[in-house]
Amino acid sequence: MVAEKPPSASQALPIVVGGFYRSGTSLVRRMLDSHSSIYCGPEVNFFRDFYGDFRDDRLARLRFFQTVRSVEPDETSLLRIFGEAYVKTLENAAARNGKRRWADKNPENALYLKEWSQLLRREFFFIHCVRHPLDAISSLVEAKFPLTVPPSFKDKVALYRRFVEAGLRGEERRQGSCQRIRYEDLVCDPESVLVGVVSKMGEAYEPAMLEFNEHPHDHGLEDRKIDESKGVHGESLGRYRKNLSRRKIRYILNECSEIMTRLNYSELVR
Image (cartoon, rainbow, N blue to C red; front, side):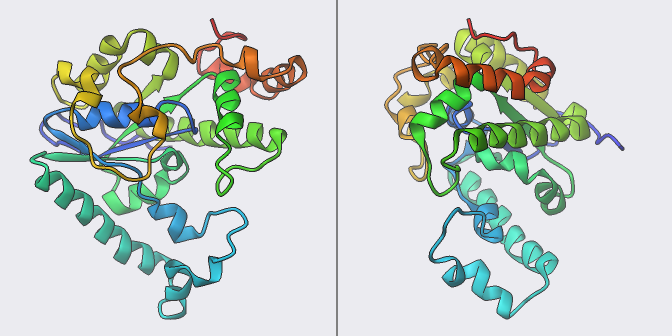
């Protein structure tokens, strides 16, 4: 495996934010968007729409990217055409907001890093948001997301593994041009985490990043909980204790033991 070159501070690479659902991607997006040099808008489901990755989608055959394949069946060509248009849209959004670089936030970006590499010619900075599986899956059970998340508990655990394993593969490929953010570290010591992240991206830390909801942000598809937050807090740490049975806790710990080791997590959330 060939490692990709780390970015220099002058490159101002695009930023791709991904990670499992309810692992802090919305919080990171608003923090980044509060930086004077970075535009990070709400989610745009480009790749999910492109591949039709929705569950039980009754309108699947009517979706644009499904019907346009009758005109251009070459998927590589389609991705290049519309992917370049999407990148241009993000560039325009950054310029319109007076920012010199852009970031794309979507949990599913962790699954589409190969596509991002194709569109951006491998030149981007990857932020991988992770969270202890007990709390992440507990939160997802509460959130539901029926069009993207399977109803079965065991399938939710398998989905967690799929996302995190894909993100870890992305970390290995990118090395110097990526940063992992653990949700627990971010909410317990946000300034230190942000200083490390923006420094690696070639930016200076700005206190405004911790005052993220005091600044205007574009509205769109986003976890509503972040819009109600007045600041960074750790109130959700250890939430699994209220939401998960002992049987489910044992199942998660067994299924995710290897991932937890790689993420430096102990068995239980403090």
